[in-house]
Length: 228
Image 1 (cartoon, rainbow, N blue to C red):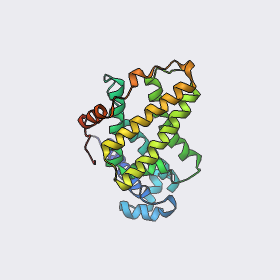
Image 2 (image 1 turned 120 degrees about the horizontal axis):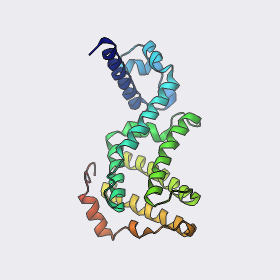
Image 3 (image 1 turned 60 degrees about the vertical axis):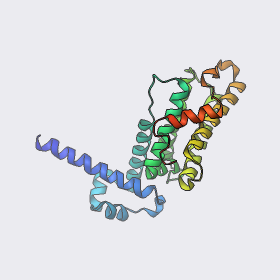
Image 4 (image 1 turned 180 degrees about the vertical axis):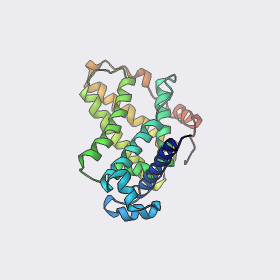
């Protein structure tokens, strides 16, 4: 391996380590409480190195949020060969795996420490709309359907908020929480289909079985009992 390539790999590794430090800090503290001095001290690097890689605190935070968004989207990819209901179940299980395994990343992503900052909001909103797009494609909707888009965007916001609450308290079993998310998705889709019948969405394929059957499916899915 030549020296330039080795140097580049070392730079990429150092950059990734700095982002990991940022995820830990911004996931547990507000943006205002995390200074460049704090980041440099935690990462055991000079402030100059942080400025060299990212240009400043805000640019560093933006990269941290982008990294968390990419990680969540990649983690929730599912097997296209699965039936729709099982694919939805797998996506929710993978989502909660990410929530449990990467709590700081998740918090940094969904809380958006810069408040009304348009770039932060755009990164976070993009990840949400990717999820909306995945569900719309699953429904066979390739043309704009504002009612479905709005309904699903609201559902995803609810999943984010309830996931943070569940992560903080852990007083509801994971299987029950998964069941709640699935049932709320079905209710959301039913409402959208009622208000927009011209969309022609047939929800039979997405029918959620009775509680007993759904509980069995959740219990038998991969990592079902993780952090239950």
